[in-house]
Each structure stands twice: as structure tokens, then as C-alpha cells.
Length: 136
Image (cartoon, rainbow, N blue to C red; front, side, top):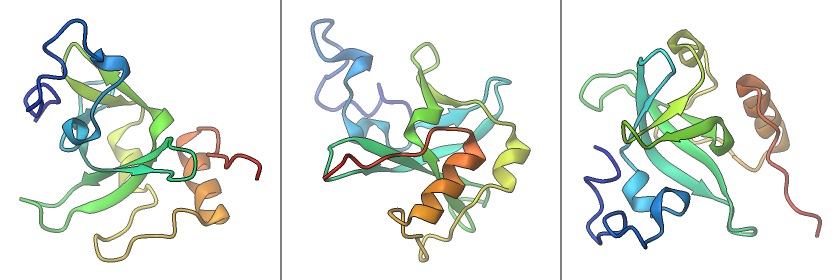
């Protein structure tokens, strides 16, 4: 389902509204994620916010499984995703095989996303700059 289909408040229908530069988080959950070869990589299941800074840290995606059973969940750095407004979905510049080996987790065994080793491993895997907490 695309963000336009989930827009119950009419956020994206008014050209004076927030537009694709400022979007409602609820309208992004469930959006498809494809790669640049037009291969379906999964869907966004959750968006993880850093409550101290107010920044989006990760999108949690599902991958694999059948009818929601056996899905592998994995966090993707928010900076690795690009909004494709033409096709109303997100793009992630990785091959599908890359996700098969991505650090993932079961829906009942989430990792500690604030653990420095987990953060470092995740960002190294996607080739993104590690999410940094601001100085106290």
C-alpha cells in the first residue's frame, strides 16, 4: 500500500501541504521497498525514532515468509532509503541477495538498537554513516 492510499487526513492532496519532504509516519508504514532493478525487497513495518533527538533512525522491514508467517525483520538505516514519489514506494540500493544475509531478527526477539556494536555492524553492512548521538 502506498503512502497516498494511507493518507486519511489528506496530507498529500493539498499542494500547499507538507508534501514529500515532510510526511506522516503512519502513512509510510506498509510502503513497499524496491531496489533500482525494480525487485521487491519487502515492506516497511515500523519506523524507529530517536526520542532524544527527534530524528528517524531506522526503518524496520519485513523480508521473506508467506502471508506474514516466517517473515524476517531487519533494520535499515533511514539514510539508506530514498523515497520514489513516481512509484509511491521506497528504494534501497541493494541486491535481494544482500538482504538474505542482512543482520535480521524475529518479531519476538528485537535487538538492542542502542547497542554501539549493533549500530556499527548494521551501518557497516549497508555502507552508511553510523547513527551518532549528539554530545550531552
